[in-house]
Every structure is written in C-alpha cells, then in structure tokens.
Image (tube, rainbow, N blue to C red; front, side):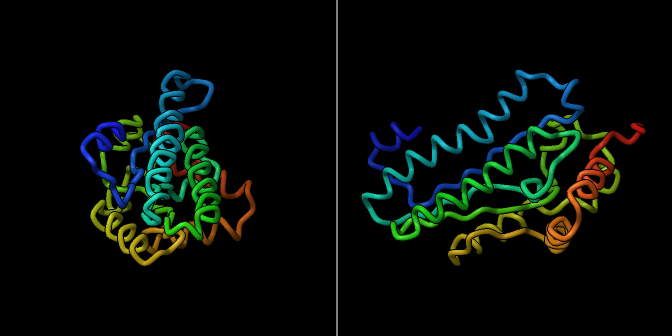
Length: 194
C-alpha cells in the first residue's frame, strides 16, 4: 500500500489505524490460527503501517496518527483474552511512540471506545454474549469517530469515547484487578454459561 502511494507521489498527513478483530471463547477452546491472525492484524499491521508513515512524515516534519485502542486495553478480558492483550499493547505502544515523536511534528493519539454498534461482535462470534443482550449498550460508530477525530485534531494523547466508558475506565483504575476481571468475565461470557 505504501509503495503504491509513493509511486503516485502521495504522502498522507494522517494515518488512522482502525482495524481490529476478536475471537470470543475460552482461551483453551479458541483456534490458535485465528488468534495469530488477530495478533497480526491488531498489532503487526499497525506497527508496519506506522513505521512506514513515520519514516515518510519525519522528512516533512509533521503528521498525525490515530490508533484505535479500546477500553479493553485497561483491563484483562476473560472470553477474549487475546483481543484485550492486543489492545493493551496498542495503548502502551501508542503512549511510548508519542513520547519519542514529541519534538518531530508527528502526533500520536489513542482512541478508546467501548462496545460499538459494528460487525465486530458478529465476526467475533459474540452474538450470544451478555454484552449483546441490550443493544442500547452499543455506541454509535459515528459518535466514536467524531470523538477520535476531534481529539486527534486537538493534539490530545488519548480519548475515552462515551460517558459510560469513561466511568468504566475510572472504576477499573480504582478497583482491584480480581474484581475487574470478574466483572469483565460476567459481561462477556455467553448468556447460557454458568
């Protein structure tokens, strides 16, 4: 993709790394090949695209990067542990390279949405999870995108999209890890699971 952009003399000023997938289920039961694909998409592709973008934009002394993290980055995630792990990586890595690039003219910000009304849950095989019992719990994708766009344009380092998600992250910061894991497990396990 970057080679084609270069051939056409295109140097994007903004990079949005928004791809992300998940697989739902107990770790011992999920498909390792699917999880490796998720790691490649959620982490490896983000690193590659960002590396190419940064090298290109350093010469031009400016650019903006928006990495789609998640409120999942702030807590362990039973029933989709690999996804939570990848988003924790994206969050930590975004903060690290933001610091490294602070004097370069290239800004890096992380967008942390919660459950959003996209095809994510269907692709993750989560249609029977408790989180899907009330579709009102899902954020509007346009609202999430606006939050990320405005935060990126304002030079913020991160934004948690949605009031309920801000509350969830705040509570996770004030609660014991075991309580956070239990709450996440209860929200994400299948409806018929004990």
